[in-house]
Length: 371
Image (cartoon, rainbow, N blue to C red; front, side):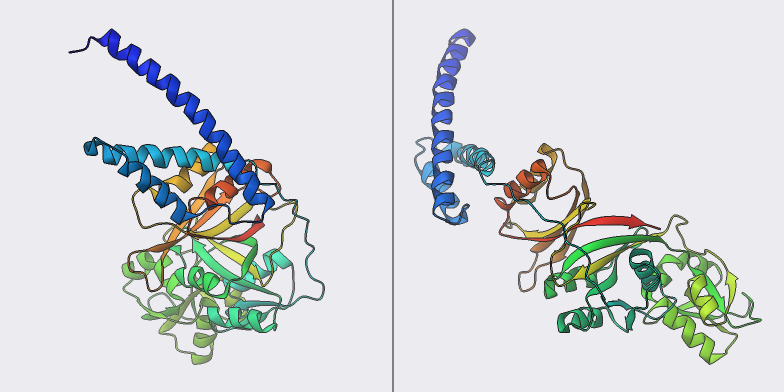
């Protein structure tokens, strides 16, 4: 048996050789990226990476070390990719001005929370309302509108998955975000009381956000297109036994009484709305970056992206997964981070993230507003 001193001396000698070879390998990695940039070649190639890993694992004499060798080679290649990404030239993103004489579409009717979010972002404008989420995307695709306003996430009920999926399906960009406080109110026709109300109508989100109140008062919820449309419906029905869950603005518009105020489960209830456009837009005030990507369906693939975010000292605001069509148990990942694309460390991080993804699309760099 070797004594500890001898073992340590041998490891020191081996490490010396490893570091010398590591330095040589990194210099060659720099030569590779320089050549690829000069010849406009694809920079990171997944098939080549798998080939290198397997070729080196096959060189092992002690096959019991195979899993360790694979990790060693993969980590070495990850370091090479990180180093190579520092040689990719940074871009200068020019500020984009908002369109003139623009048209804005939203899902819902006047008095809806989407209408409120639209006014919070664009000011007191007349938007074009549509019945369904996808109607807004289709109108934007056809050029009927220049911007769309859609809910993406609620602080108490989570992601509105339809809009995540539609955002990818239509390939549009996020150019703004408006977060608004959501006070859900029980509305009824003039003179109706809480004891009168047996059924309520609202958007599914409105019903979810007020579930505790509804259960406590034995009121049955019914899903409707949106909160304000539900208010309009009961105003027209003039039935004192039905109510709606909607905003105070909807109560004013449709001449309804507020029977119970702020009945949401979470009193800090907020909804995040996105402003979407056909083209990418960026402004100096942009402070949030959204992207969508896929990774290999294997251990550690998503971790590598998270590691890059951490090592570049970037705050991750949100990550959301959605099923990848036609690929069971594989997912798109939607990632939001704080930053502006004209910050060098942000660009470096994004370049590196691309090396760990199979597909990658920048959805937007935009300003977040709250009201």
